[in-house]
Image (cartoon, one colour):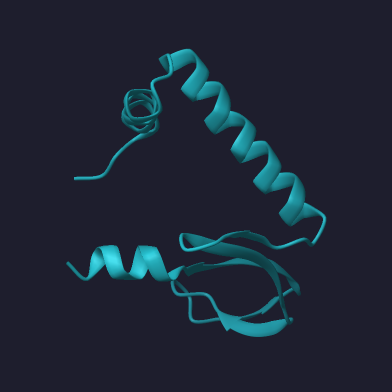
Length: 93
């Protein structure tokens, strides 16, 4: 079972002793900062938890799975997320 945004906001509010409105605002602000930083090419690192960075993808030849036809996939950007040490240890339990 996964945790959706509403459940995450409620859990953050409970743990941080905030209202759900305050918790939702904090989560929205975090999301904005993350997007702005990655759009500018700046990595975001939360020590122990995770790091996120924008990576370049080279142009390449792909294949349409329905027709088998070769297609050109243009160069672009992707996102790389790496788990930090605290997160890695937490999932080993």
